[in-house]
Length: 374
Ligand SMILES: *Cc1c(COP(=O)(O)O)cnc(C)c1O
Image 1 (tube, rainbow, N blue to C red):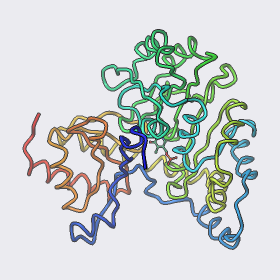
Image 2: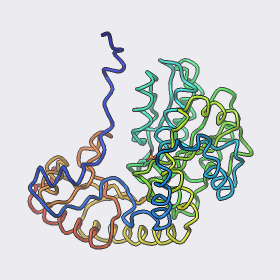
Image 3: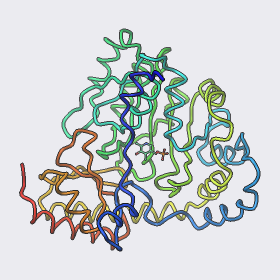
Image 4: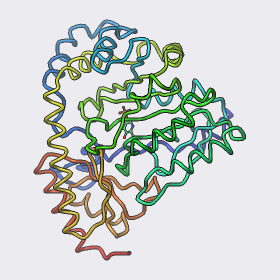
């Protein structure tokens, strides 16, 4: 059978190495994973109970309109129901946006080192990815992005801008004044949708951060993506939330499969959104863990980027393939970010205190075993 060359060229998304696989390959029994920005506290106990209760109805199809979950999101995040779409993770919502707005060989634009899902989802729809350079410190260069849109938007048929705010894997955020200036020119643009992916929203400590949601009444071409995979601890249940102009939401409902969010996931999400206490605990543990990492990485002499997420990217100053291999042998799974072009950097997710300590101890040993290359 003939297969489209764009499909043949796709590079599949490479998730963090599973614990079971690491145990098997390295003959280990005690392995920790700080590689996928998951919630180390697990999921809210209320969400767990809700899932167990919902299992009784496992033979029934889910509510295709996810009425109750929609209601919960609407109240909690103060957004009208007709502007909400729930996805099988925000990954699905990214996919829907690309499929709705881009024909094959049209484009999306992203800053360099943006979350990789945008490129992967675009590729799957044969849509091109335009990138704009960053400023120092991996900051989004809004000047470069604006220049691209002014000069090349039409010739590249660019329809969507994706801004991960904060970004993964770098952890950097876009300061509010820069977002405001950018939207002053491109907000309400008739042929452009600006998508803010705010997967790490809950963890942000920067004072000059502003959610894209706060621009939605002023500008009609803003989409905001949230996920329950990170702070809410539901990565395995796959729940993403899109807040969008009503027309966009309506199109997404037409395109999505009718039962894209399982009833177990809906039940978990409703309960999780009600458990503010769990989110508070999660954020406190995360901030404490980040501060611990900053302190320890400084002591180890490893440069890092201050992060607004639940992870930190740091420079091992060594060949990351070697460092990663040595860490795996010690039963510590972190995340090399080679797929972003980072050859010596790694991403480390905040875990429980003892996991954080073990990761740092393993790293310390590995640094002594491997010669710096920088
Ligand atoms: C983890 C992450 C997501 C969430 O993906 P899900 O499909 O909802 O699990 C989205 N955007 C970014 C930038 C992320 O890091």
